[in-house]
Image 1 (cartoon, one colour):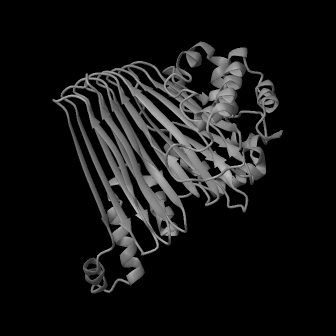
Image 2 (cartoon, helix red, strand yellow):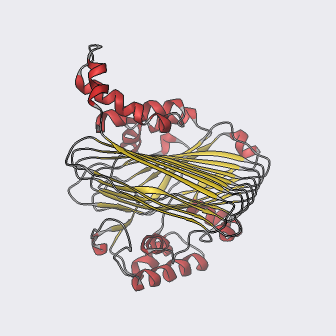
Image 3 (tube, helix red, strand yellow):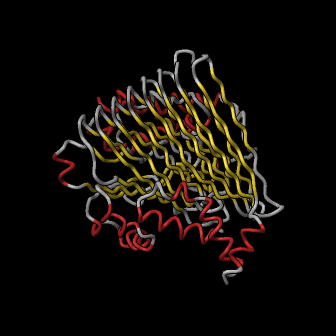
Length: 436
């Protein structure tokens, strides 16, 4: 099934095809009404144009969700195998795969099922756990927030749903993999994660697409709820093709003594606009965002983070590493607010950019606001190039110049790479070498 063009009738077709409850269909229609009223020019960031009538909003190769790779269509399974998806499953506690608009594969270790952990697609969760989904869905990322949350609310399909019960800690990560495989395709997954009190989760997602002359759109929404004394780490490595517009809204709400960590790697895409957010609602809560962005060949990476401090004694850290080369543009855009009641709180921002050539550029656009007199924000930003002295030193050791540059860049990104599981750090190294 394929649905192209953004109309109310097409949105109803998607909902009908999925056999959704009335509240879900109504949410879609209301989101579309908001989208229609919104200015299509975003209030900040790079200027770009998308023809929303040319996008494929829904496409499925199968409507069957399986936990058996042998039941996945052979061409699709073969493609995912070449990408290393099947092999990576051995390191995970659970795996989900979305191909085009639908999650086609989902599996989880039995010991997690015994612990009452839920890990499935958002569509399956809406059918099986409607009260739990309805309690959290669209509460922290509203369909009125911006143009692309309204668009996602209209046509969302696929994405993960995770519920970690109280007093449950996972020893291994859960992973989802997202693949766009058609030209002109839009992918609008919706991920909802609830980490209940005194629990821990590490979730990893990977994203890829082949290159086409026609642009594709990826406009996802991620909502995460971190309970009291709980911890969630969300790791992303996206290597979209250079024809993909990657416009994502990610937000987490953190309760007392909770911790949220965003580990965010952006290597591909034509344009990325992504600013993971932590709303530090609870006292003593913590938020971290460590990110890299590599912009090359006229790519624009407009990335950063948001930290909203509401509770007392809250702490946040943003570390942003950017590389611009071959005419690329790597921007940091941040928003840190320590509200009146967030007394005795602290935020640290560190932005480092490495510009490789004279055709590339970078801007830092921070908004830092402290609204009480017992809290502190520290902001540090550096822009540099590969130093001639470092190159000379390495070349005196008999290392070719290209290899020297590669080593310097990998060292520059070490603070991000050390946050990844070993197998993902190796994969990141290979991706960086192909893109540098």
